[in-house]
Length: 397
Ligand SMILES: *[C@@H]1O[C@H](CO)[C@@H](O)[C@H](O)[C@H]1NC(C)=O
Image (cartoon, rainbow, N blue to C red; front, side, top):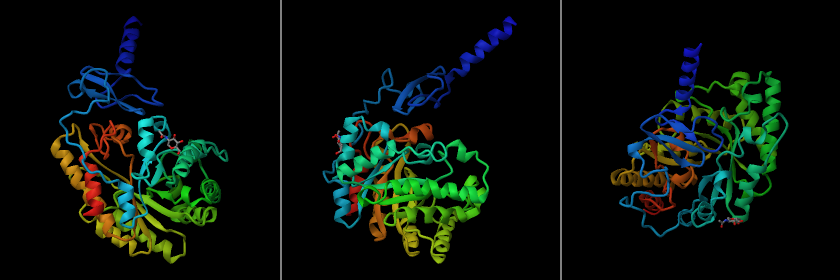
């Protein structure tokens, strides 16, 4: 018994420490807050503290506030949204999220319509945030972002109505007849979209459908497809159109930025929807890229979508790297940003570009891709990086 108790105590101690690159803190985190030997718990953003090898962390205490001084910074004095509008785009925008807004240094830049003419709520309009229980809607988080956009004269991209992820369990784990799930989708999309309808300035577009396909172009297996087949797509689009006839209705996905089975599947879906008069206005290409691996046929793909009588937008752009940052990686990242933006510039039907938050301080990358980061055009101290100059060059060159 005594040995077992000792063993259990030992197991408890071991499991109470996060592994290398594991999470060790952040808003909502209930797991271990210490790291295995040789690692330090570093705050990468308020949601995500990560165990990093001690040699790669600077100083003690894991402060995010000191970027290595030697790294190059951006020098352009032009402003992204001003320049984007000047070449005929509707906006240059950024994702944001409610817990970031109390950070006044962050919000000051987000508010600046010279930089951002559009914002996307990163989380607070998703299903788990807006209808956590069936028929019980909560819009407080989404309203905070919509009100900010309205006050500052920024467009909003609603994000999103129907997605396999961040679903409340009553949806994700529900067992429904086709008729029941149809009503649930209609009520969710209809109520959500109508709540933000009526003011073009606060609801430019909606990602009605998010990430419906697997990377091989087959339909993703989730409660929607498994219950309704592909008919969940027109059901949601028609409910959104009825709720806000003026909002642009988008389907948004990743790995459709280059030729391949997933892009082909998305093009086929758009053709089918168009030929059956289902309302669909746009395709969102997320563009979560890796430094040095930006697709070279992005402009061609954008043109192919536009040829199907939809607009396109770059909806979630970031370009991540394996840390630590180096001069060479930042230079390549600048070129990569320039090439992505230039592809949108070259295609008249590419209406705008949204980056998936503007600063490394609040990027989702380190929490999802261990050991990677530095994906945004502003660093964690709100200093513009060479990538910022790449964006301006892409808009103007
Ligand atoms: C950002 O804009 C909102 C709405 O105009 C304003 O209430 C808020 O004070 C601004 N924040 C900062 C930090 O300037």
